[in-house]
Amino acid sequence: MRVFRLTKRKYAGDLSGKGAALSNNRWNSKGTEILYTADSRALAMAEVMVHLTMYMLPDDYMMMEIDIPVGVSIAQTDIVDVSGFQWPASIETQRAGDALIRSGETCVLKVPSAVVKGDFNYLINPAHSDAKKIRIIETVPFPFDRRVFK
Image (cartoon, rainbow, N blue to C red; front, side, top):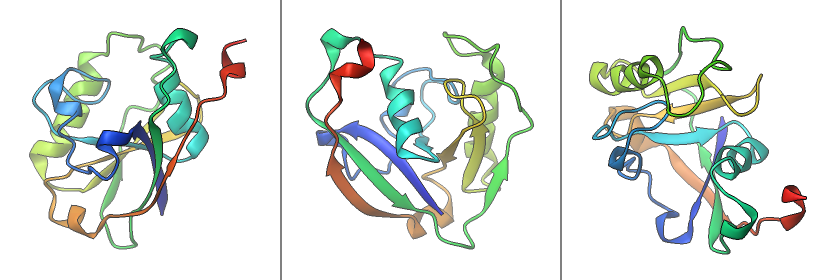
């Protein structure tokens, strides 16, 4: 399965989840290393864009295409509707992501996007033994089109 991650150039190639651990996020609490990916390039962009304004558009973003090979364990959260979960993130979703990491039962957790209803993000547990099988296929520059803010 292919997933996508949009990140600043200096973090391209990093699958450690250390960036997410720096703060509370939708699916992890501060201190929990987890890697956020999306099921499409468009969703990866949407997930980043909700945190930006036209005046903040970066020029150093890279799109990472990541392969999660067959056999890597993937589970799906019981939380099916996150449309009511606005920012700041809910404790319920943070607990679900933190539990993924602590349990060690699965490498990847499929979760619904709060940004694009019907699409999914895939959270990778970098501490899971299967995580070493996950590979970056390609990393390419990703310039934002300013028209998305018109």
